[in-house]
Length: 341
Image (cartoon, rainbow, N blue to C red; front, side, top):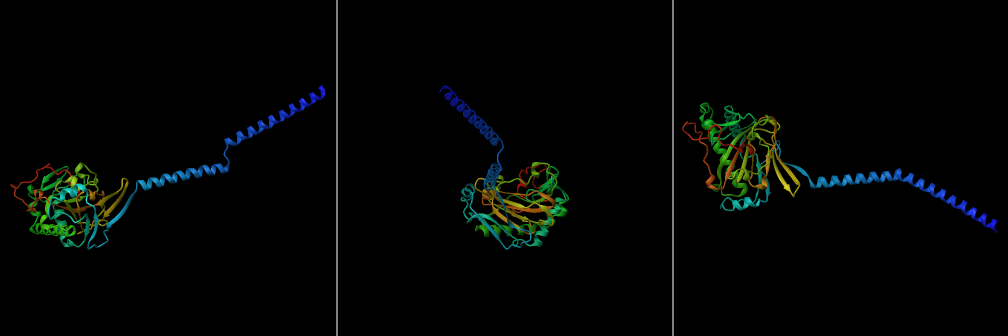
């Protein structure tokens, strides 16, 4: 009996040892499998990574997105193109004080039929003649026929105090300048449905000459985004008359409206300058803009600005070449004028 019992115990022991070995082998095999993922597991891992990267890209490009749209190209000949916009609240609150000068709707327009190429050519000759007497050292020069301010080096001089100016500016120049200003003023009144007599020329109104020379002072940095009403308190309507052609006379230098759509989405709306092309817009925050840096050649334009407030109105220039005439002296105040070339 004891022998029989001993034999049974021995078999149980042997059986137990075998199970332990198998368990240890299974455990060892399991451990080895977890440290080296199978091919299927690797594929799953990479699929997850690709999915996460894709989701991140979609979120980024839908949250921070800048689109581009061409409002006017150099090759087009435009009778009139408009884009209505909602007025910014501060602009609307201010302009509502001026009867006859309240736009039916804010916005922008561009036309190649307001000023003739011949008129633009005469004004280009005037600008070139004026800039022969002075240019900015930083590639962004202005000539203000009303105040006489002319860029020279890193300062400003009064062009009417330069004897050479008497030989450059003619009656033809001044007459064409006045005639063009009147036609642009009428175009603003027509487009925004204003009483033209309620619209007044205001300061600053000036010629600009832009090149790719490196900026030397803040006056040369014309490419920063800005709102005219915030830069110039007098402005209610801004116009630009281009005197040279994008892609022919210069590269870069496009005019860019910046339309914000929500917190992060933006649309850049481009105007390619063209000789005799006129663009105009309400001067509030609805028309934030800037000018691209010129990369080659020379870009000429005139900024002609209008106000509804008689307090800021100014007369047409008289080409005052008398030494006794008042005007800005060298180093005079011209801060911010290149914000609107």
